[in-house]
Every structure is written in C-alpha cells, then in structure tokens.
Image (cartoon, rainbow, N blue to C red; front, top):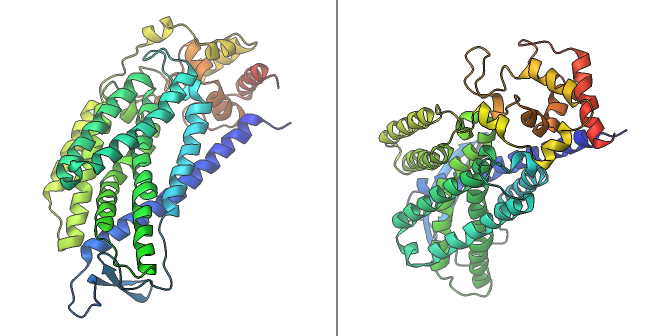
Length: 410
C-alpha cells in the first residue's frame, strides 16, 4: 500500500530542492553582474558606445568583458538572456508555498490565537497580498519617486515593515516570515518579468530595426536590478527562518524581520563599495553586528501564548478529528513521554530555551495539530526523538502510526 503522506513529503522535498538550486543560480548570476558592473574600468580604446571593461581570470582562463551602457551599434549574432533562473526560483517557491501553506494551511498557515479565519480566507490573503505588493511597488517606481532612489528605498522599507506587522497579526510565526520573504521575492521576480526583460526586448528590437535605442530603458532596468540586489539577502534569511524559532517564535518577530532588511542593505553596501573602489567601508560591519545583537535580544522574549492559554483554547475541526480518533490516548502519552521535554513552551531539557522548530507537543490540541509531522518524524522514521536524548520503543512508534492511519482510513 502506498502511503500518501510519504509520497507527499518526498514531493515537497523535491520541490524544495529545486527551489534551492534555482535560487542559488539566480543569486549567483545577480551578484556577479552587479559586481561586474561596479568593477568596470574606462578605456578610450573601447568600441563606440562601450562605457567600461573588466579583465577576469577563472578556471585557468582569462575573460574580457565589455559593457555597453545602452547597446552596441548593431545586434550581435549571439545573445544570452539571463531570466530563467529568476522565473524558475519564483515558480518553484510558489509551488512550495502552496504545498505547505495552502494544502497544509490548517497546520502551518493559520493561528487561531491571532485571527479567527477560515482556511480559504487565509489562502486568499496569502496569494492576494503577494499580487497587491507588486502593484503598489510598481506604481511607486513609476511615479516621480523613481527619480529619487534613496527616498524610494525608504518608502519600500516602510512598506515591508507594514507587511511584516500585518502578516504577524494573521498567520503563524513561521508563515508570517515566510510570506514576507515571498512578498519580497515576488517583487524581485516581477521586476525581471514585467520591467527588465520587456525593456531589454525593446532595445533588441530597436537594434534589429537599425534604430538607436533610448537610454531610458537601461535606466529603468538598472533601478529595478539595484533593488533586487539589496533585497536578496533578507529574502534568503526569511526563507530559512522557519527552521529557527528564535527568529519567528516571539511577539516581536515582525521587528526582527524588519531589522533583517537593514542588515541586507549594510552588507550589500559593503560589497558593492568594495567592488567599485577596492575597499569596503568598515562601518557597515559595525552597524550589521549592532543590528544582529538587537535581533538576538528581541528573540529572547517569550511567545505570547502560555501553556495555560493553549490548554484553554478550543480545538479546531482539524485537531478534533485527530483527537477523537481511536488510539489517540496511547499516541498522546507516547509523545508526551518522549517529546514534550524539548517541545514545550518552557523546555526542561538541558539549557534549551525554545522548542525545536517552534513545535509544541504538550496539550491534546498540540499533538493533534502536528499529527502528520509526528507520524513522519517519530512513527515511520526514527528521526525524532534524537537517540542520544531518549530511546523511544517500537511499540510507542507503532501506536503513533496506528493512530494516524486510523484517521486516514488506511
């Protein structure tokens, strides 16, 4: 018999792997071209329209790169477009978001303690906010603010802070930070799809027709590409944050996420300046360390929900289905006896301050809510609990498997 939970988990793993691979390709290409652009040196012997060149050595060979600020005098025979890395990253990320936070929305997306929403409402907010974010950002860039990049970046930062706060009023901590990352990544990919690539196609069409391309198209693409450069590192942090409850598990998670955007600016400013001048400003590292210290301090605040709050909260329909199933009592005590010393709101194992991955397994609602994870981590596999912490016997693992399969009718 095929276990759908196992198949689904491997599908999710495969999409996640694809997302990581394509993100590495996109980030690598983006950082390379920004660095290259900043390292270009003028040379009077360059062809007409060229504004700089750079010699590089890699893999035993020398590379000579020349940049045309607008376009060469005629269309080259071969032209490589850098776009698929961005599209594949967003598409795989969107698929992963849907698999985890839409299909698994009752577990991972909605937090009844924050907002009493139906799953369809949460999904609507999830997808709608990503679209709305791009529309607002795009209009800001097309307004007069586009002529003042510094003010535009400050307004963009204010928008991101507002979204960080808003997501944390509705979604679970993990979903809130992940959605802020998806919100930002959607802006970045939309920049490529709706602005950078169309403007480059106009330039190519002009060259093929023998016309001189307008410099404004390169200027627009440059602005959007610069935004992408400064937003990349915070997006990476937010995508990884769901593994670290210190990032998402406090009531100040929205401030932590907001400060991370500032660290992205300081770190990129250092490297961008270094590529351009050969030496980066050291003050950026002082500011970055100070921001990370502030983030670490904010992370020490306890989550708003206490054990008493969780115990008093009524079960959702999803949780009730698992709690009413035959075998729940045996599974409940198996989990409580083997997992709750770490997965508690006040962990008692060693010097642990936070439950791993922010997963609590204390109340009946906790255990019913995380049934699928318990099934995969402690039922089908021996991933949890860690063998050096406690040895869970086979009978208890079998009780967990029997309980979940009873609900699924397997």
